[in-house]
Amino acid sequence: MENIESVKLYALNNVLSKWSELVNLVVVAGDRRKESKDLEEKAEMNKMYGLIETYKLNGQFRWISSQMNRVRNGELYHVICDTKGAFVQPAVDEAFGLTVVEAMTCGLPTFATCNGGPAEIIVHGKSGYHIDPYHGDRAADLLVEFFEKSIADPSHWDKISHGGLQRIEEK
Image (cartoon, rainbow, N blue to C red; front, side, top):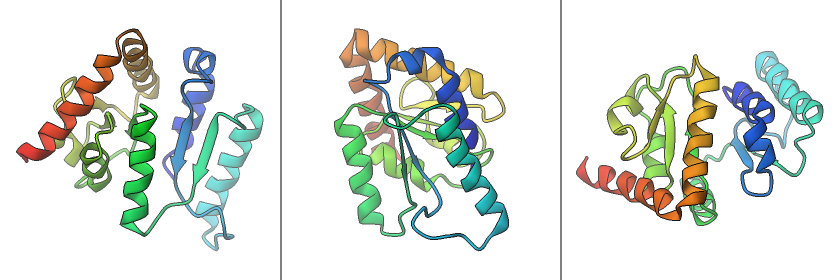
């Protein structure tokens, strides 16, 4: 569950908090429906619940259990795309980046780790954005900048969305 820091950054970022009607955080991780037997995963899930409570994220945060069904994942990406959202993959390292490819294929502007496969998939600023998982504050600033530009000029969101689709077609 690499999403703990993303949740904290979202909660602490004043600009994103100010936009709570416009920008919500959706985390797809773990399986909330059942109790984990893995002690480390259990501890991470408890941290996530603690962040939701501490930062009063109810109504701004949606935690969806990981899906094994790829069709359901695709539908999730399309729903987020329809609401002009973005996909963030904050892993420290990602060997290939299947979720990045899936998100870009659905037209979602994508922010993904600058380490591993996503570094080759995304052309920074054209088909998505590279983020450094060791500098979450910079990743948050990049997201804020993207959404500020997209609100001021909705064609900016479309440009990055189309850039991602075009990049997937090229590869």
